[in-house]
Image 1 (spheres, one colour):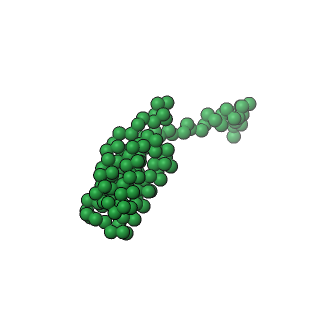
Image 2: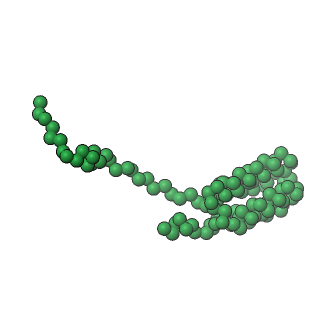
Image 3: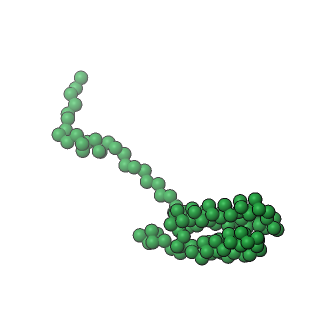
Length: 124
């Protein structure tokens, strides 16, 4: 059995045997993506029911609050500020039993969600 030739720098040999990490580039999420889905779902619900009942209005409000929360958590509120304002207006209109006003506000929000401001992270 032959003896192995040990080098003086074991750490260097050890590092050489470790494969480099695999870097996978993930596409950056679109600002307000969850809010966009919430707006689309709320619009579909409002279009299918002319005047939603109380449980439906509460469910739509919860849906929109969830979309706003995700937007705030990801730090995108300032990039889609006009759409966020329109969603808040839609929530107020739903609370005031004005589904037509909520629909108009949600349509404006959907339009505003189509063109987010550029991120400073993307500029790097």
